[in-house]
Length: 188
Image (tube, rainbow, N blue to C red; front, side, top):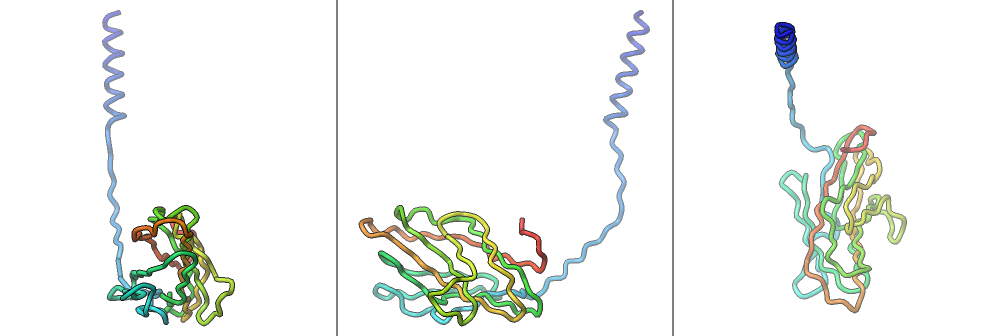
C-alpha cells in the first residue's frame, strides 16, 4: 500500500511538472512606423487674439508648432458671454475624417447653473443657428462631431453662462482631445 501511495505521489508530481512546462515559439514580424504630416489641424479663428472683456485682456489662442495642439484663454463675466470663431479645425487632406472631441478634464468649479459650451459651426455659418455639434465642458465624455470633408474647415465658438449672485470663480481649465479617423469606428 505504501508503494502504491508513493507511485501516485510521483505520478502527480510528474503531471504538475509537465503542466508547468512552458514552450515558446518565436515568429519574425516587422512593423514599419512611417510618420506623416497631420491631415487635420487647428488654425486661429477670426476673433483669436482680439480684445476680450476686462482691462488688458485678450482672447488668447496659441497653436503648437505643427498646429496639432491648441490652447484658448477667455475672460467671461456674469450672464452669457459668447466667443465667436476663436479657433478653427481644418482638414488639409483630400479625404473625409470623422471627428470627435473628448473632454478628459471638465470644469466643475463654476457656480451651480453655469454652462460652458464649445459650439462647432460650418465655416461662414451665420449665428445664431444650429451648430454641427455642441460639446459641454462641464462634464467628461466623447462627443461625435461629424465628418469633416477634404479641404473643409469648421469654426469653434465658446459660450459661457455664469449666474449672477455668486462670486466670480477662479480660472479653471478643461482638457480636451480632438480625435479624428478615416474609419467609421468609435475611438477607444
